[in-house]
Length: 144
Image (cartoon, rainbow, N blue to C red):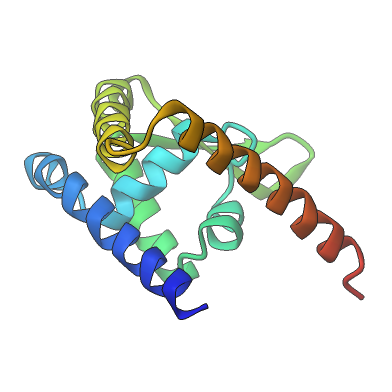
């Protein structure tokens, strides 16, 4: 199973390398960029706690980078009515061009990642991921 860990590590390094030129241009740390893109691409997740749990980014890094994104006008905080302890993170209008460019980088990254696969291989890969996702859900349902 070491190959899986090595693949995950290579994937993360290659993705960071693909994002680096845009991050440099925008003067955004990779983590801030990742947070912004996570929120933009996953509207069901809207809190710092979601980022910590789902993206597995340490809470202190989330806090520092969310503060930076808010200061620079890419995110705004909204308090949930009736629960002042819960703060939603919302992408601003200023963030939209960055998000569009980030999505273009992500799209190009995945095109390059799948460049040497045909449609049948891609379809099989995504079917396998779907089955594995269901298996993981079943395993987590059994969790005490």
